[in-house]
Image 1: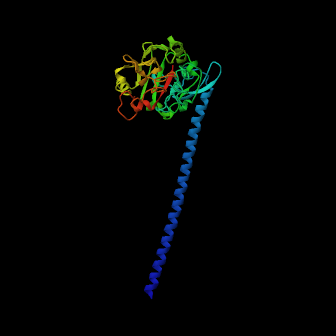
Image 2 (image 1 turned 90 degrees about the horizontal axis):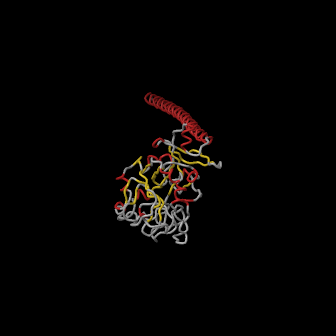
Image 3 (image 1 turned 120 degrees about the vertical axis):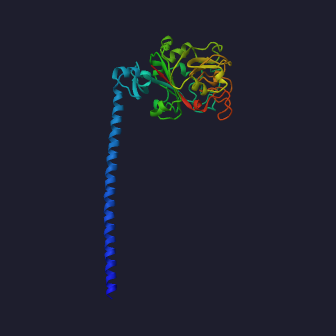
Amino acid sequence: MLFHVLLSLVVLVSVEDASLAASTLQIEDEELTHTEAIRDDEMSQNLTRTNFEQLEKLSNRSRYVARSCKEIQDRYHEHEDGLYFLTTANGMVYQTFCDMTTAGGGWTLVASVHENSIYGRCTVGDRWSSQQGNNANLPDGDGNWSNRNTFGAAEGATSDDFKNPGYYEIRAEDMSVWHVPNNFPLEHWNLAAILRYHTENHFLRLYGGNLFQMFSQYPVRYNVGSPSNRGPAIPIVYDHGDKESTKRLYGPNSRGEFEPGFITFRAINIEHAAMAICSGVKPVRGYNTEHYCIGGGGYFHTDQCGDFPSFDWDRLGREQGWSASKEMTEAAVLLFYR
């Protein structure tokens, strides 16, 4: 009998200890949960405060009055890459990306050439050639190399074509070009670029200060002249990449026709179709420029029409031949002035 009484007491004490332990654990869990909630709330407040401060800093940039990123750099001592607001001579305000670090900074993004479908032939989205089909009766195509049309947004310049008023409004001396993989966010453009370079000989002074004026002198249209009648070829300074890596971005057949280390304007192929820009290269022999030059007028050979006219001649993923590399074909071309 005494044994059973003692056993009952032991069980009762064990149950009470277990209950006490459970209660203590529950209290500790509640305190831990409360502590975590406080910490999460503090982190959220800090993040919100940081975001607000960043947004406030970006918003303050709208107070700047300047016509180029170089003017912003000189007048307001800004040295951070990012989006800024510029004002045209007529008072129109627009937003664009400023490269404030490359080669002293002050570079204004004015345009991007983005190939939305390598298999399309002068179809919707080919704003830098023709969206109206391959038509000999429309030799200029959409004509955006030498008109005042604008389209797109700076932040989406790697996802679609882009052109702002700075393209025809800014009077610049040099150009910078970035090849950035499609759809990359703006804050990673610099590091993501497969090729970046700039000029430093102030060549735009000779051509009215921008591409709008240059292509008025060297029209980008079908049957404008013979292949030898191309525009200027300007030496470049590499910021990322070099001559050898530039060559590898294009097809092995193309490499036998050009010399890397230049940017060339208004190249003409054997079929008399004009392309606007040969990025990173200068045609020196042969006239198959459709495989390594971008943009153009409204009429090409049947398999060449588009913003990247014939970068996929041998089709992506097959024997490369004349085709440009997948990296080059799937990267937007960003154009800057300074």
